[in-house]
Image 1 (cartoon, rainbow, N blue to C red):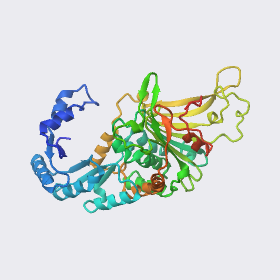
Image 2: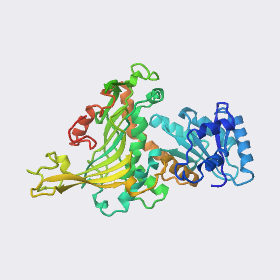
Image 3: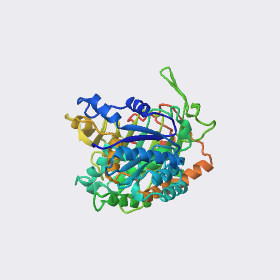
Image 4: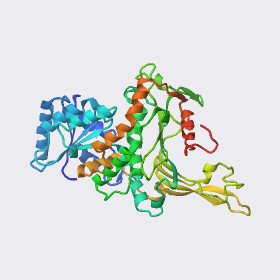
Length: 463
């Protein structure tokens, strides 16, 4: 891309060089670092500028427009605004920028970061306010999880491999699990996090978007609107969550190996007595012909034993399985080990693997559970682009397939708003779990209600 400039805009006073110094602290030549990296970094930084102004000030954006016009030097300009700001000032910025700093001849687009409201009503109000100044086609609601390589590959895996197409329904799939865990706490961001909690932060957007891609029907084409139409149908077919289908938790202090780990409420930015969940598990259902009765289990949490994001598809048991009686399956007889499981690991170490049963070599009839693996780092000797890189390029090119449409957002909030409201009105106390553990025991009871065992639990049953 030969002709581009990057402008930072905020209230802080800063020079162009100050912005460049800030960017250079994290700027790398990650993809082609061997080829004149320092020269490329220098060329990029020369295109970075700064304009100070108030977020609700048309005068500030007028000055930004003047500087942009100067840099564009008579070329046909396109302008992309990235709103990495608190949601309470989205509308102020859009109003001022759209009125005074829109492109005079090309396109103008706005990338909006989550959270998109706190519930169905506030999200709808935000959408209506944005549409006072923008068309829906100008709004790019970004969810970086949709730009991750394995999420992108989900549709390819399903729709371009005949072996999976007949299996992708209630006839063969027993349950689907969407699991997200972080091995660190709020780390001083508790003030922000406490306003939203893990359900709004992770489940209502990242995990629900992945669920919609997983469960949708075959779209008419790969066009953005065709794909988003199918996702909306899935979301509208889902039952609203009830309190009995949700378990919430909050991490407590813990000492391990002589090291002390703080509780969530020990974070000085978290209000005293907070009941905001740092962990949640939920059972969701899609009431349509393909998925009727199949539990979609979500689990997300902070300060857990590992960092993980994955989709686990557990298939039904083989009817009348000859080997389920009296056979030693993997050294034990747990029935779940005798069922097939497809796992898509989104992070870390992207991978796809299928658990199958096979005979252990030898004279006896001893079965074992093994994996057919595709490890991206071994198969593809190249660096995987960051999700934001993919999504920023898509926004520049006008590709909306991985961005969230307003009716998708409405349907997503309609599922979660009732249970969020009930949790907050009743001040439901979260179950405490130790920092660095597998989360609250209640999550396992929730899964057992549907005869499901979480796929990320080790075979020894430890928590």
